[in-house]
Amino acid sequence: MNTLTLFCIHCSMDEAREKLFLEGDNLIPNPNKDCPRWLCCLLPCLNNTQAMVAYRACEPDAAYVVRDGDELCVDADGLVVGDVVTLKPGTIVPADVIIFDCTENFTVTCFDKRGVHIQCKPLSPQTTKDLHNLCFAGCMVLRGNAKGIVINTGENTLMAYLIDNKHWPLSQKAKSMSTV
Image 1 (cartoon, one colour):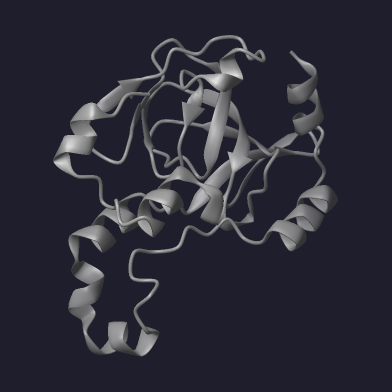
Image 2 (cartoon, rainbow, N blue to C red):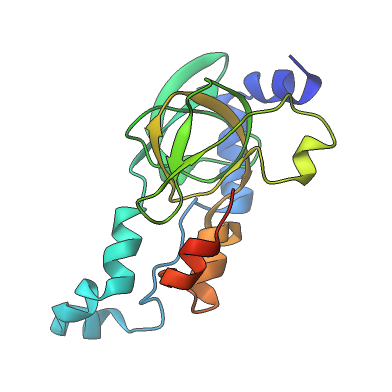
């Protein structure tokens, strides 16, 4: 186990609360963020657009996080950078994460229904610079288990970037070109 992992496993609830206060909630802006709330209420069809349906399918409710040395199930909005999260089959990845440990069969979807197999390498300065150990907020775990360190939350995630730059939901061309 490396120093980065040891540091994160020992994050306390108090440290996480302080980070959450400073950094804000782990909330990814929805594709209709520029639309006034009253208009969305009057025109419910806005909530059924392709972008909103894809967004809701990628929205996590809860996350398994290690705090004070114990694994807890917490509201995904409460994650902070540096948290260690456990990813299990059927869960949505709650933030952008660097995987430092996973089972051989660890497989996720990336904003679509194709399974992407993540081959985990030991965490080192070299592996943090490639995409082999990254899982992004909104991906769903299909098989296997993994542990990772949260590197981006909320508006700093890849999913938020795609939404902000009008690339959400991913086009068929982008889906077929995507590699993790």
